[in-house]
Length: 221
Image (cartoon, rainbow, N blue to C red; front, side, top):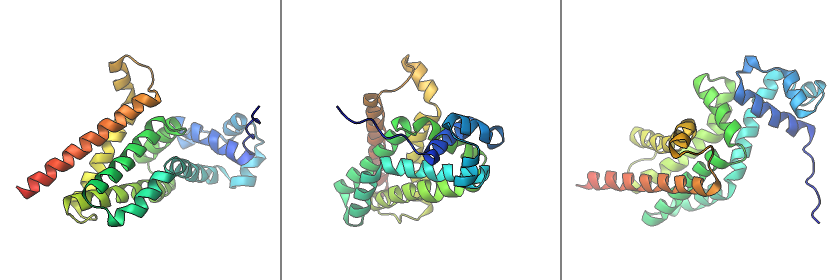
């Protein structure tokens, strides 16, 4: 019989509860006492681990970034190692691995609901925590995609065109997350299972490759 999983320590319980609370409500609408009650922790634990509510909020942003990175660690490392030498089919494979992995993390990962809500709130009303999300998550992801797209199209990865194009590609994933309720109702469902998320990820990747092929052919015509 397998041993039961070790309970989360106080700090992680607080971060888990904070991610849910700050995802559901504005910063001003969340109380430290509510988070502590959800985490089954003493209010003094906030001061001990984070200093104050603002420190907890910033730590929650780091926790979100670390959690999403952990779910994609193997893919990110493989892309990092192989991108400098990739061409053609290898670039396309790495691109679909990265974009598909992002889709799976955003739509079905353990942080999916709370992470998306937290990020969307910061996108609409950026605070100091947005720097953590941008530097730790958004910029590295989009720069990795931009490098691959740039190699495929023969355009500098840091060009304005590739920056805009890469953001548009990521937007395919965001559309399924931000407007999830719309597509669920159209499909007559209440949620997505892992197989359905794979279907969405594959569709996004197919659409991306078709778009890039069209752009490449148009540029060479």
